[in-house]
Amino acid sequence: MVVPLDKIDHVILQALLLDGRASFSAIARETKLTDVAIKKRFESLKKRGVIDSVSVGLNYKVLGYENPIFLQLRTDVSKNKDIIKKLQGMDFVIELYQVLGEYNLIAKLIVPNLDSAEKFISQLGLIDGVIDLKTMVVLSDVKKSKTLPATTFQNKI
Image (cartoon, rainbow, N blue to C red; front, side):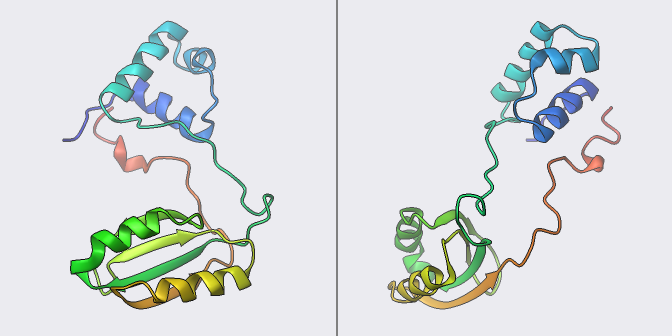
């Protein structure tokens, strides 16, 4: 179900996407509404499922981790449930997606160094049901958007 949004909702979402700590007062000044009205709008967006969380973005490099690694996994679909459960329990796996295509799972890893990555990936290959792995090491972030596509709100405002 697509949730209808108006211009004020758009301003609230954009402000929070750019800075999750943006105060209701600051957003209220931008929209010429009260901070109470913005808080009510925020709560409504949460209730309707538009906002599922407000979180912190981490700089993994500063914390001692290498650039992220993406793994494409081709698995025996009949064993997917067990493989997913194992991957969900692994510390280095920070994101996991089930996808369509030649490979049916994509995992995003952060590791302290490439030696750790090599050991981790070798262990993954031993999991029953993992048929093939493809590894991609991120060289640099080229685009990491913190906004919604402009087309999200064209015709709705």
